[in-house]
Amino acid sequence: MRSKIIYGASAFVAAIFLLIMFNSCNERIDAGYEGILVKMYGSDKGVQDVSLVTGRVWYNPFTENVYEFPTYVQTINYPHFTVNAKDGSVFTVDPTLSFKVRDGQSPIIFKKYRKDIQEITETTLFNYIRDAFRIEFNKYSTDSIISNREKFEFAIQSNMGALLSKEGFVLEQMTSGIQYPETITKAINAKNAAVQQAMMVENELKVAQAQARKLIVQAEAEAKANELRKMSLNPLLIQQQFIEKWDGKTPIYGNAPAFFKSVQ
Image (cartoon, rainbow, N blue to C red; front, side):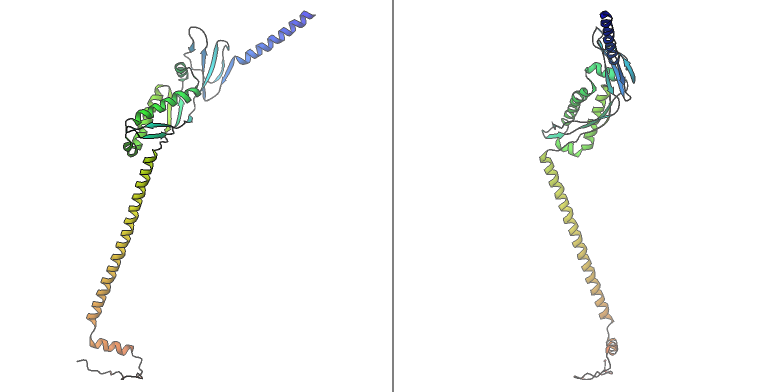
């Protein structure tokens, strides 16, 4: 009886063990990921030449392991760092990288770096970014970086895209977040302030010139009007205007107006 109990208990333990083993011998690869099967022992340690598709993958947990590589676009905001320009000026770079693993390249990437995607992103790709900026900054002086900002950033993005492509990644977008040195920022602000001040003075000058021209035109018009009035005045016209404006009353003081004053 005791032997049957021991046998039953052993069978139960074995069943539990097999159930645990069964659950630990498979991995579900979700959509948006690629699974790679890695051999942990033997002469052929590394990654099989097969990229596992999405679904459930069976493996030996004692000798093999399964890694998941996301194939969707990831956006990483890296910590800022400083880079020197060709003339020694120090710029701060705060890069953001959007990239994805090229479909089917997960086994090759893992075989080369022996790291998961998170570690590759935080270390290897960050080193690539710093090197790309360092190399490009060493080609430009401070003035040329400022005056050719678009060309400069396009060159960095093109070089970074080519580098990632060789490593099995696809570059979607990269922003540099370049911050100019404080002295350069102050100089730019001072220049902008001077330009704005010059524009303000120029506008005020234009207004003053316009007002002066307006006064000149008004004076010329008034002088011309006076000249025309002077030319049009004659004794008969003056007498007529006097009659038109007289109210018909004899003044209390002084002489009465003479209507037929000689105009000779």
